Amino acid sequence: MADLRSRAKAFYAAFDVDRPINFGLDELIASDMAKPEAVYVERIHGVDESSDPVLELVDQIEYSQTNGAYLFTGNRGSGKTTELMRLAKTLRATGHEILYVDLAEHLPGSGPVELSDLLIAQLGAIGGNIEARFGSLGKPGFLERVWSFFQAEPELAPLAVPGGPAELKAALLRTPAFRVELQRRLRGKLHKLIELAQQFVVEVVNLVRIHRGDPYRKVVLITDSLEHLRGAGGPEEAQKVFVSMEALFVRHADVLRLPGLSAIYTVPPSLPMLAPSLAGLYAGGRVFTLPSVQIYEHRPRAGEAPEPSERGIAKLLAVVERRYNWHGGFFTAGQLRRLAVYSGADLRDFFRLLRLAVSHAARGGLPTSDTIFAAAEGAVRRDMLPLTNDERAWLRRIGNSSRAETPRRNELLEFARMLQNKQVLICHNGDEWYTPHPLLRAELGLSS
Image 1 (cartoon, rainbow, N blue to C red):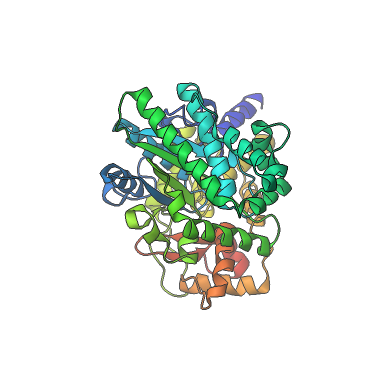
Image 2 (image 1 turned 90 degrees about the horizontal axis):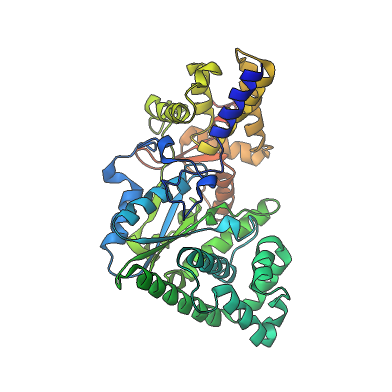
């Protein structure tokens, strides 16, 4: 029994959902917060080099002779951070300097976002990264400059917290009321904040080039996790976040194109739907979309369930093999396949299902019974419940047609919320189509 528990503990650790693969780029994501490249499964998303969004984005950055802002998206749990690290590795091999910011470490996970708090969080983090890599800027960092700016402006003085830049950083992350007040007071002073930001970015780029001894070195800034922002309460709060995202990326596209570097921002997959003109505002003329693992063959015919893709499911099973090759001691191939299908191609949920199942197996003993899998699936399903009668009817229509079923524009915000909650999945094999999460099909009375 002790040996079983120790194996279960090792299995559990192998599927940590919060540790992306960093491809050896420890200066971007520390090795103790990442998984090694050895566990990466090539072509897991089912695309070849000719249609690989990561390689297409690499080409756009390499070919461009000017600074630009690029948008990168994908379903929650599709492995965006890992793929951004693959992008960083590829660009670094061709002589680019890569800077990386995980906004989840600098902004709270809920509430509307505005240009003011984005710039302060993003560039405040970059200042710290640059000092860690090259030493002191020789000038105040961005948070120091912002704090001095607050002190110098009577209307902004209440934002100059007594603890200085360090407390400013902490307040922005941990005090929602402070963040709201910061957004409100800076709306009339955005032009000055933008000037500070642009000046700082130019200095950072110059510092990189001096330290690398290359006056033409290209610098790439990856800003990750912005798409994770959610509403703090019900549907109305979620809609406020989507509206703020649309305003940020449409109204301020020119500001997000930071001087002297290529900037990549992760955005929710629903944003192009909410703002149809979005792609034309950004470099590359498109939103670079990472497809989920293709667990379905193609768009089904009306009224039919999607046909599982054995190739896509095999990719998910290969992930298990790479991370823990004694998995057969816990689960049969059929049981693993079941979890792969019910994950909805969400790697986070797949890992969560595996961890829930193995922890139950360690307590209950082997062989692992199917009731354990039903319990794990129920835990994930509950995240998507309860459903209102209107939501049930809407999801049934989507399940029967594979379309968004949004005849009125004012329904798009609600549809975006269902995408974020994973009640609806976007599939990109062939054309773009939609399907209810597989764990909801029985709940909705849809065929499986």
